[in-house]
Amino acid sequence: MSIPTIKHVRAYVVRGGGADYHDQGDSHWIDDHICTPMSKYPEYCQSRQSFGINVLGSLVIEIEDSEGHVGLGVTTAGEIGAYIVEKHFARFLEGARVTDIEKLWDQMFNASLFYGRKGVVINTLSGVDLALWDLLGKVREEPVHVMLGGAVRDELQFYATGARPDLAKDMGFIGGKMPLQWGPAHGDEGLKKNIEKLAEMRSRVGDDFWLMFDCWMSLNVEYATRLAHAAQEYGLKWIEEALPPDDYWGYAKLRQQVPSTMMVTTGEHEATRWGFRMLMEMDCCDLIQPDVGWCGGVTELLKISALADAHGKLVVPHGSSVYSYHFVATRHNSPFAEFLMMAPQADKVVPMFNPLLLDEPVPVNGRLKISELDKPGFGVRLNPECKLHRPYTH
Ligand SMILES: C[C@H](O)[C@H](O)CC(=O)C(=O)O
Ligand SMILES: [Mg+2]
Image 1 (cartoon, rainbow, N blue to C red):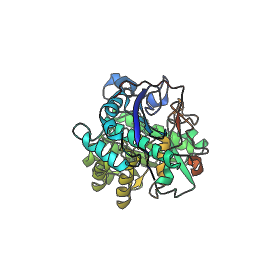
Image 2: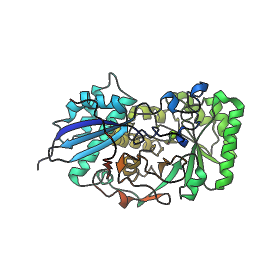
Image 3: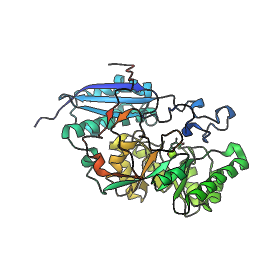
Image 4: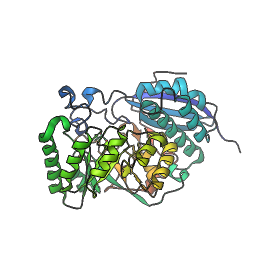
């Protein structure tokens, strides 16, 4: 039997939505006064785009094999990522067999260790890894979830992230995660407004619908503890990413201090098995949220998930649409998935990577049948109407 080899690697940049889902137009809930570590500067408080949350843009990676199959991966890494793929990672990929995913991951990681480890370099590596899994699926004519061992359930169930949990409930989701709007810089008055918002949502959705706060790295232990206790009365299910990702010590303390009925979650800005090992061994949280496009790709997520399983932690990946769904379908310790509401008013279901991908499945009534994922690879293709820019070649 002959195994195809990788012939060409190409990296493109695209603006406006896609993998960089913060790169939206005006009047979008995702850029409307969300609390961040930059909120202490009044000039960067109202809009995350004002401090550059959308500065990277989407990175699109195509990996073509000797038989003409093309694997596609996308992530948030823009032009920096395109440079790394073309000028550095391509040397390992071209000429390798399409099955060499584990070895290629190791080579890309170790070769970039001196400037990488986390952040945009691992985002880039993740995007390449997704393209490799997509390519292998196309060669084998199998969905990624089949290659990962097969689905353990018939359908996925989703909670929604957005400004309108009440509308998410009407759309069939099991819960709604709201961005926190006020942080320590806004004092007691801000904390009161956060709780008022939660109370209002609780009154709209009733007792049984999950409500969560996404704090996007912006609090400190003291504030997060006070917020958690004040939110207990309104049944907050979890407090997410309350602290900066490097504050493992703070997370460990916070987890001890929140009400016992409330989960502490984090991990969307964490990367690799070593980063997650810190979160787990220090008992920082109850549920981890790796983003498959940022944590090291599917190859690394499998290791992170096995580690989490052994520590009794749930794994509910951050966003990332089909790239998460194929994984969540196959894991017992990933009982549900996230859906990020990309409609500007969070009032309807729009594909998360809109407009970049075609054939991207979306939840219907808060659920997605695994059979919707039964296509080779990740089952999505590039929208030809999106303008791709290839800033570097090799
Ligand atoms: C809403 C959050 O601030 C962020 O944009 C998305 C996120 O952290 C999540 O989906 O989780
Ligand atoms: Mg989050």
